[in-house]
Image 1 (tube, rainbow, N blue to C red):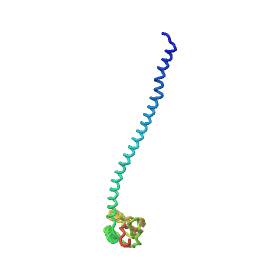
Image 2 (cartoon, rainbow, N blue to C red):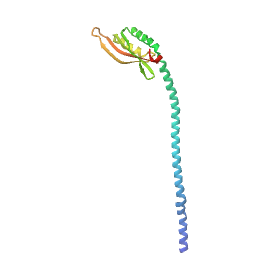
Image 3 (tube, rainbow, N blue to C red):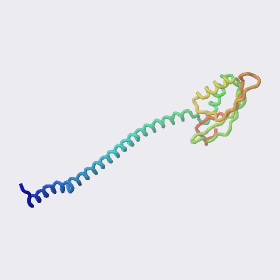
Image 4 (cartoon, helix red, strand yellow):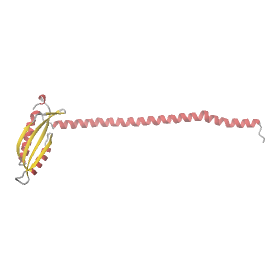
Length: 181
């Protein structure tokens, strides 16, 4: 078999058609397919993030409900301004039950604490240290919200185990009648 000019041209055209179709048809289509895959991956990622945010929104709504219930519970533990005396009576009964002597109770002016009021009471208690420790534990178990922002304890030199404690007991209450008790 002999190769002539006609056969060479035919062979050239035969090789040029698949090469040209690769460069002008398949390669651009492959690029478009790859671009479409990237767009799909991007949109799937956006949908995944949207799904996560939606789940968080539902969780946040449930969390807001729980927080609302917790706030209601805390507010139920706040006495009104008229009930601060009741809390003070409870504190005095606890001290008496622990065989402590309530030497001094002095009420300071109520202080605004966020949306509530705080009634600081300066107190001096004397007695046995173990009784005072039990007194603090009982104070912690009160239904009302209280705190002891400062506490100074001195050991008695006369009797073993005896002490004197000077502290401020703050009672939180709901402000009524202009916030004055």
